Image (cartoon, rainbow, N blue to C red; front, side, top):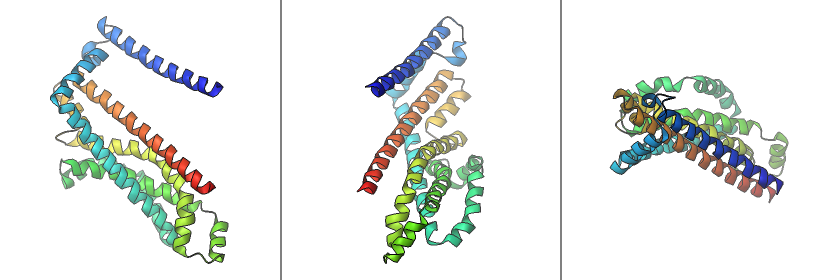
Length: 259
């Protein structure tokens, strides 16, 4: 009971604080405490968003950004995790590749966005590639970190019992690395979103990033705020979905290990 009460209290404070900030924003804009041209107001943002939604433009841009983000996230996480896990089969290759992974992770990949747009065009592909590059190295390092945490004693025990390398990999290495892979999902969804949006900032014919850039060039700051708010909502929903997926996977993995 106490835990549930605390949880409801926290939720009430969170939503209450949001409502207070929105109300202060609206009132401040109406009484000119803040400049309505630069900061707009919640009511104007909602009105502009409804107009764009009814025209179909807002939904088209949301789909475009969400699709490129999710596809880059899924490809980067899957391929990066597979590479990190396969390092277990060759520790020597892993030792050679590890410094390169560190360098690639430190590389400011967003700075390569203009080059990627030139290579892959201004369409959907360049956004997916940039989101992929933002996530694949992180996923590989997370998986490799999980591989390094495998208990050598358990590996020796399985070998003594006659287990083959593929059996050790599937029954010991993958389960041991899975928590690290799952934990990295939260970081990767944010990186994928950043990659997709930056790609749209550079050059694109649609997407929420393109909406923000276009609205800024014509000084339609209401539309800029619509893009920012909608992008924030989409980001929060994606993050919440990944957190839920993480909890489900961890619960299922814990139940499997217990059995």
